[in-house]
Length: 376
Image (cartoon, rainbow, N blue to C red; front, side):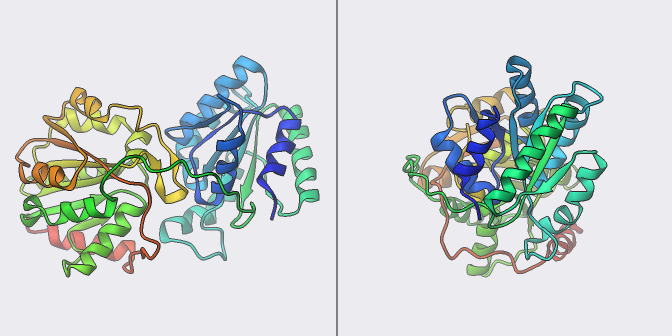
């Protein structure tokens, strides 16, 4: 394993001092180091991976330097367009270094949503004609890889990628920044949702990527509720609300509840405009806002600086509320009616240490939900 400081210093010595991307659990120590040690204005958590490529490209245009973009391999999907139509050598020839967390690496146990992603990551980079190496775990080998990277960038002026395996970076303990001031946990908020009057009626829940889906699953188990009403969006970060919209437009007699996250909403914020334009009266959109990418290390989002309720209102949501306590959330849920509704819920960072994962497969989840919705 290598020190994050060593890797970053090797890059800085060659002029790379700008870092933008979306956090990943395999890169959490890398991100923690940058958060504490990067100079002001040189470390940016982007709303999505494509935006990070564009942000880094703008930096290069302004400075002539080589920036770095970090992401999970699932984020390559968001980044393909700007990588091929902006940074590519046949277009603007923007030199970029990609650092990509290799989730689902063949032979390494991982969650179902990462298996295919991991299996095709190398082939995807090959198809995009992006040269890459698997980042070594020994400093001498890393120095050689970095030197080769910059030689190639000097020759081609385009993109080079480092694939990062599990346990590549040694732990970096960042000083905790403290609580965000919220009073209730995300799990308490999820419990309030599934026990609310609106959930006693015919409904389905579409929950976002990460901890919220895991907590929903465990709370259903704990209270003997079954899982047939829930769609756990284990991948496809940022798309839960559009899955819900697709269901709601076809199943008008069902209440469709979206359990979303702040990072997910920010990733594809245009979804709010789409919902507001359609105005499905059977959608209740709940955003659990802890101002953090909680599932991959707790790195901050910009959700504490953005008026999500104001955005939802301007997009056409008909009932918009922000709540900070369980009592206020319960009251908001009790008043849910036949209007497109947006509720922002302030929640704490973090989850239980013993929080489990769904035992059913994604296909079993899909089959049970479709069977439940069939009569409606």
